[in-house]
Length: 320
Image (tube, rainbow, N blue to C red):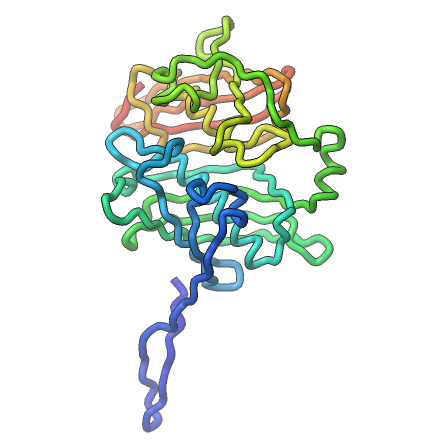
């Protein structure tokens, strides 16, 4: 932690006083690319160094989508979503990136300590320390960077997260996407699997549809009316929706064993397009020895082409 310390000189002797106050700046939902305030988790930020920042975030105790999971702990997927929102908001504020720029996460990962994710009755504030590195500039503005975060509660690290980010202006994005840059307002919604199978209490949050193919495979289920996953019209299927669909597939693939993904990572190979079936397939690798972790690999394909590759790890005490 970089604390500036004021000093006073009295009779030639330097006397240390309290650390310099660090002003925090508020964050809006728009800076986090959210429309609803209840879906925006970062609340304030301050600079620690040239490319290091501290973000205050508040994790909800009763969010309808990012609800607490088994044992009354915060959903580990909140780590990835908070990192994503906090990074975008700080990039807008600190690097003077306009709100109409597009962000592309080419990969994303998180690791957490479940014992540090307990839902509190009083305070669910989280400190998120963000470090940006490998900055690339184009036309005087940052266009690519690496993001690494450390999450702390009561001064103790409870999770880490990271990813590689690319930024592009609205016109450049439309040139890149061509005819597919037009936002899609609605698509036919496929039938859901049983919510219990994927660890969801409500059918509205189910992102998998049954298929008659191989066991451990499903079709992606997309509902553009979902208030959290689709804050505004989009021209492609959001990456966090794919990450959550992969988590649901891993949950189903490991049933009936309790599934808690203490580590998750995803790499995106291309945009996931609307109107093309996306096949989700899983492969479970049981613990190879006592004390080792179970691994669940999840892939997504459209028209035979890879869209994403995802991996989850379970706690060592859990077996498949």
